[in-house]
Amino acid sequence: MSRRVRLALLTPALLGLGGLFAWAIAGLPEFGDYRGPYGYVLNQIVVPLRHSTNVVMGTTFDVRGLDTMGEEFILYAAVVGVTLLLRDESGAGRVERRTRRARSDTVRLLGVLMIGVGLLVGLWLVAFGYITPGGGFPGGVVLAGAIVVLYLVGSHRDYGPFRNEHALDPFEGLGAGGYVITGLAALALGLQFLTNLFGYGKAGTLLSAGSIGILNAASGIAVTVAMLLLFAEFLETYVVPLEPEDVGS
Amino acid sequence: MSYLPYAVAAWLCLVGLAGVATSKNLIHLAVCLTVTQSSSYVLLLSVGYVEHGKAPIFKGIPLHSTAVDPVVQALTLTDVVVSVVVVALILALALDAHRLSGTVDPDGITDFSG
Image 1: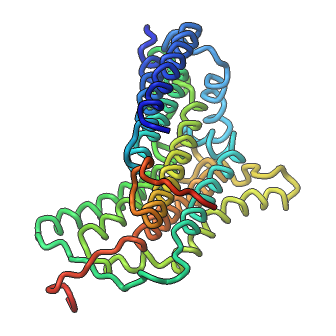
Image 2: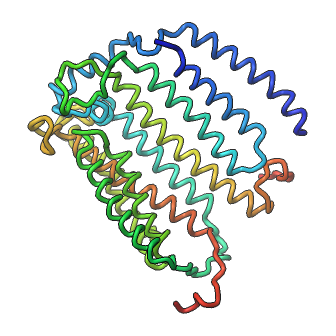
Image 3: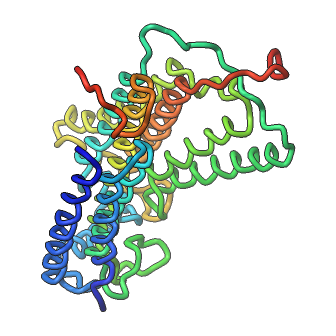
């Protein structure tokens, strides 16, 4: 299809869709005029029933815990998909690559500081996910991001352990499997799948919210490792020619 | 109050779609798709907003304060995860396309097979 034909088709289509959007918006309640009962109900019941002060995570890991398990497996399926797409079966182009270390001391220093701060913030977001804003999903992304900074400021070799799929796979299994096992543990006790098993503790402390804490940690691990696996797969196809002065460094 | 956040969501969706349709680079196309998907975050968070509502995190605020809908926030979380994996898959396909045809311009990839 030529570019002109495509634009000719696109313009009326977008105008039509825009018109439909305008029609739909005109029928919505105004911004801030929230009517649905579910938000109010959850805000009233999650803290008293589950002692999870972060109601969003209480919803994610308890009220709709089964959905979140599906969500974790979406991530898992994507890692498998990217691995299969990028796997080069011939082995051609699989050269051991060494990239230049960042030469500037300032960049290296700032980078190392960023790794430290990033890891700390990531761990805090995961650990306190069910108490304050955060949770396993955003925290896991921050943790993986902090580790990827190591690649930016260090060398390919420094990053070695984090692109070793065989080392990462057990952790991905721990994260994804830990979620399912927590659910199955309830079944084994004759309760419904993913029933919140443990004592609810004191709201607003780390020892609260029962299974939510475990599911939160499991998804934190699963997300961190999934992101690292995705990055490792892309890294493997990225070829950097060695510069003469880098050989043997 | 106003309808502005809904209009922003609609605009992001349309502008992202226009970008996808006219893109000359598969990586640019992936970014445009992210813009389209962002419209769903804006829409979800807008429909759950309660006037003068606080974040639904009852640490440091009294239990019976008015707070916004936590359901749509949890849905936005799912949405972000889906967006990330879709971008990862598109980028992987873009790499493959580049390896097989030597270009990342969708119009330049002429011979599809398999």
